[in-house]
Structures are given as structure tokens and as C-alpha cells.
Length: 444
View 1 (cartoon, rainbow, N blue to C red):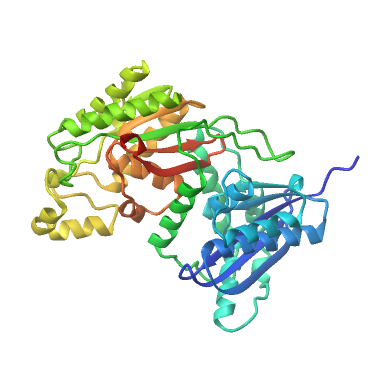
View 2 (cartoon, rainbow, N blue to C red):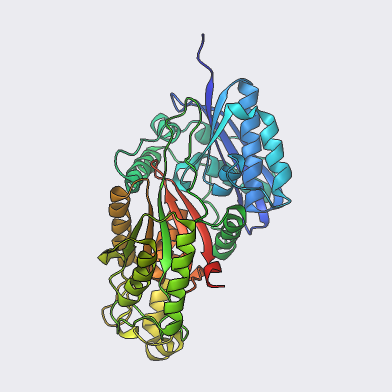
């Protein structure tokens, strides 16, 4: 019996304004050789990123069907929203998305199509096509394939089609991404391509966060489902390691919005903060999914963690890497007071993750290195388990940012309430599922 025909479809869409001038790109690849079998791209006028991404998916599936209607197709996209909705794991509630998803689902039988999320750097071919289409639309022209785009370097195309599997814990997936980037760097530049237009950060981030929060159930109601790549595409990834992220309860400094890091007075929980800690303990006990409790060494986190652990019948492990950033001379001050006393240092800190707070504080870049290393170490030690990490604002935001693949500026676009819960599920292939719920329902 002959083996089924297999294709890889990579698709992307973009909007310069969200909504704004938009276009999509899609490519069909031979998974064995990385050869480009078909390309599609089109300028679609004013639309959102998500609409353009769905249009790219539709075009890619149609191109694969035209090549072989009985083919097994693996779709790779850097849109977590499209991948999760088309995989059936997230509900589709937006009225503009429902007809597009239905159209995509009709192109090929469901059993012939599987979906996989990939980082943006591994979706360069489709991204380039989308930008070529938008550039052509800006000139009032129709997109036409350029020779350089169609003739991607064979090594780079093969790296795109069959990226190296991670050999270590999920954090090692960065090595595979680096290999792909290196292969792409060796490929000839597409003469007709332009750099991707950077979308407005706030619009992109909050649109994704709202879609995530609207699409999934509360993060602790059940274990996250195992992700499979479908028949013939690879093994079941198994149960993820799930980090439930709990910000500590209030201290006296919290309502005043004062900088409170690891270099300050190490305040304890206030009366309100103790109530919050006991309330979240009851909420976690009712769900019954936490298997391990790990805490920052700072007092406010350890008190919160102890309240939860006592209720769950668990012990608390202290992890130095989960401590808050050291805010140096800004400790105990409000933002307005820092702006008045250290205006130049504050502006530099807002402008660059490399800049540290006045007086020997820790930069966001340094904190990211520390927290990334802590994450990888904990993932290796707690594979397949659900772990409560009791920590601070900055570590939670960094873990969420890294899982989303968002830029460093995203740290300033997130709000995190005291004693709130979020979660990240880390899969064995290096992908992560983020639940941006900022859940404080246990306090009401």
C-alpha cells in the first residue's frame, strides 16, 4: 500500500495598523526535502491580523488540496489563536472568525489536517510572502512570486520544514530555533521582500490576551490537555509541566503602588494580604490540582505559600531564582517620586531592558536571564506535574512574556493584581500554552 502524500503548509498574515492594510502569505513544502511546492499571497485591503492569518490558512490549505486532495497536511503557524481554534482546543467566539474557520475546515477532511504552533522566527517564508503582498497592494499592484522567494536556499528550506527536535528539557527548544535562524541567515535575501511592519504592541498583546481569556476555561479547573501532532507527524507530547503563577498577597506598600523589590525592607503581608493568602489557599484546595509549592525567599511570598501549603498538606520549597527584581535606590518610592528624584535614570529604564534602576538595581535583561534559568531548572525537575510558583509581579510577567514570545516592552503592558493566578503549561516540544486570566475570583 503506497504511503500517503504529505505536505507542510506554513501560513501567516499581517495588518499594518490592526486593523489596517493587510495581506497574507502561504507556502506548501515537501516535508522530506523542504522544497517549495506552491506559494500564495494576496493583499486583502483593510483587515485585522487575525483575519489576515485565517485568510493565509485558507489559501495554504487550498493550495495543498490542489496539489493532492488526499494529502496529509501539517499546518504550521505562529498564530496561537488560529492553531488552537482550528485544533478544537479553544472556542471561536468572535463573529469575524467563525465563518473563516468554517471555510478553512471545509477545504480538506478534518482527519487529513493537523496543526502546530511555531515561533515567528520559524515562519519567515510565509511572513515574507505576506509582506510582499502588502507592499504590492500599497503600490496598487497584484502580488507576483519573486524568483528569490521561490528559490529559498535548500538548507534553509529544509530547516523550516523539519526543525531539529529538542534533545533536552523544554527550555532547550531555543537551540532548535537558533539553528533555524542560522539556516535562514545563510539563505539568499529575497530582493522583493521588505521587513515586517511592527504592529502596535498594545493592540497585538491585548487582542491576544483577550482572545486567550475568552477562549479557555479557568486555568485550574482541570489538567491542560496533551497536545498531539496527529497520525504520522510525531509522538504524543504527553502531559505538560504546568506552572500556576501566584503573585503574593498585599503588603502595606501594595495599595500605594510603591517599588518593592528584593533590595528593600522585605515587608510582610498586611491584614488584607493574609486574608487573600487564605482565600487563594481555599480556592486551590477546592480544585485539587497542585502537587508542589515553590516560593520566592522573600517574606511576603513565603507567608502566602505557607498558607496555601498548610491547606493542601504540602511543604514549601524556597527557590532563590523567583525573587523580585532589586529596584536599588527606588525601593519604597512611588513612580512619581522616582520620576521627580531620578528622571533620567527612570526614562532610561523605561526605554531599555538593559538599563538598571539607580543605585545598583537589577535590569529586566538580567532578571530575564535569571528567571529563564530558574524556569528551565524547575521544568527539568517537575516534568508532567502541576507546580504552584509563589512569586512577584516581575517574575510572573517575564514568564508570561517569554511563553508568548512577546518583546520586552510587553512587561509595561501587563497588569497583575495581588494574589492573582495565571498559568503556563510547558509541553515537551518546547511550546507553551498561556492562560492570561489574572484570576482573582477566589477573593470575591
